[in-house]
Length: 468
Image 1 (cartoon, helix red, strand yellow):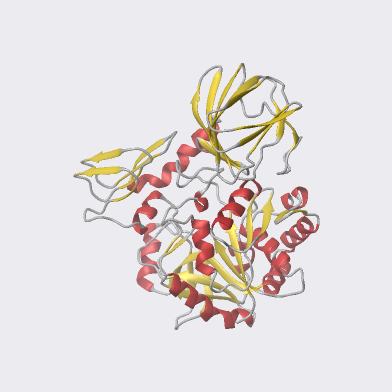
Image 2: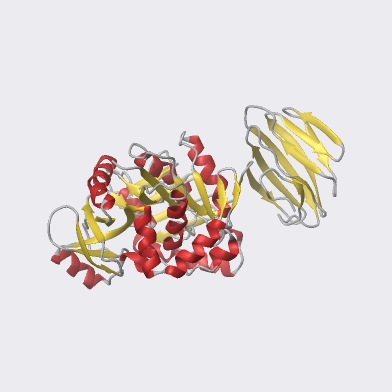
């Protein structure tokens, strides 16, 4: 088999699985279908076939989440291409293809969304192997999911009749219910999985023919990219100049070299809470749940709980409870959760973007209590990590160490605090918090002042490139 280079697409706006998924923490970073997050599961699924570390294309705001989650499962150090703005899949894959071919190689690119579920992983790997010969010979292969229902939430691929890999006749937009039923009855139609296999050079060649404007913009963005360790920041101005288009529209619908391999691999894009219910393990009453859930006289429902949730006498319901939001919806209306997110964004409410616990490259903070002139946070700092050297103009801070060791810089003083010790950071003081130990540092921070917003911060130095 030729050099197989996995490309993991890690975009997403975090709207369809709200409130668990948010813009700053979309579903690929969540353990929705097992102990691993969906990003981690995607890498583990392809790892036995891969001949190189993954190339991940991600939102710049998610860079540390990608790196940390792959590090946790022992994945080889990835190349992480950072998009300054979202431009859909055609430019994202172009950036990955250009990077993969930069050293003169021409690997097979296995392009995988990082937020899908595949229950039959062995069948998936066998399908990839079956498609390699055609991809090596110049075909642009996509994997079509054998449909088991007249689904209106997916695009379809119509293929020539036959067995195994066969030419694509056309790509079809998401149909209405009547058309979806006709596709299922006719046969030869498959759900568009968004997974692809082709040589880097072939994709770039087709893009050069059909969308040279995209290729030119992405080539310029990668050429002017800034390297920061494993992160490759695509140039904002150049990448923003690229049209936003999917690989389907930009290449696959135009090329004469598209082929599809129908597969039955237990696939789901987990595009809604009802879709998650379908792939989850259910009890005798058809209920699926995660967390502390009690169900009485309840059927065909899904519940996700971070605290105790009780369902009594309900059917076909979805209940999702997080620290700062609760969703209650009929299972057949969960697609409308996007309207909730739209209203939250219109009102500029933080619940559209952030969880109560906010992840940062150094760890996380959880706002457990907020008042007019105070805020209490639970802060976790990873071993060896440090926050920026910073100051605040409107608030003072009290730090109490719960566990671990804290190294504190406060103006010209540097000292360490241990469990049950505390310190005070006055308004305007330059300060830094570090974890010099080998275990997680946990502390409680009490802020007080006339303004407590996260933008009241001046950074003087920062190891994560965020200094002012």
